Image (tube, rainbow, N blue to C red; front, side, top):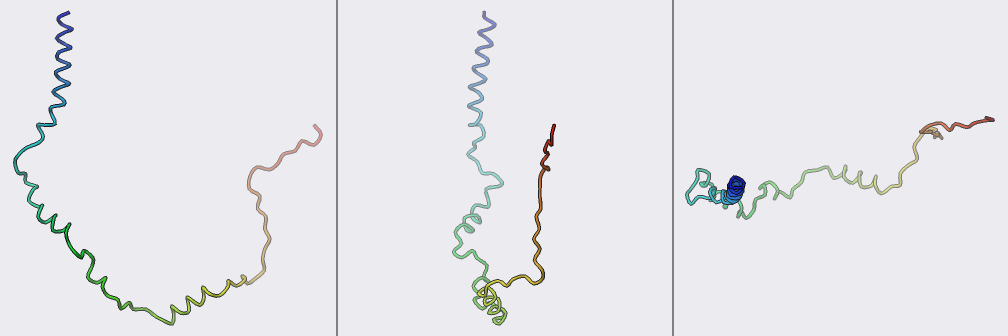
Length: 101
């Protein structure tokens, strides 16, 4: 019986020690990766992070081509030229009928 109690105590203490292991990962010292916080804060608080070229409102383009495209969308679509084909496509298994059996 004493062996079972010893195993129970060891099991319980190992479970409790596993919960306390998280406190060992917290330190009150500086690390080598802690030197970039000022740069990170500066980037987070940037007033205008956009590309300076995005303020350019003089967009180059061909106006006549743009008007032609808009007029094309205003007109109803034309019928396709050439003969129209009426085609039926059957997809799936063929129907099997038993004639007289």
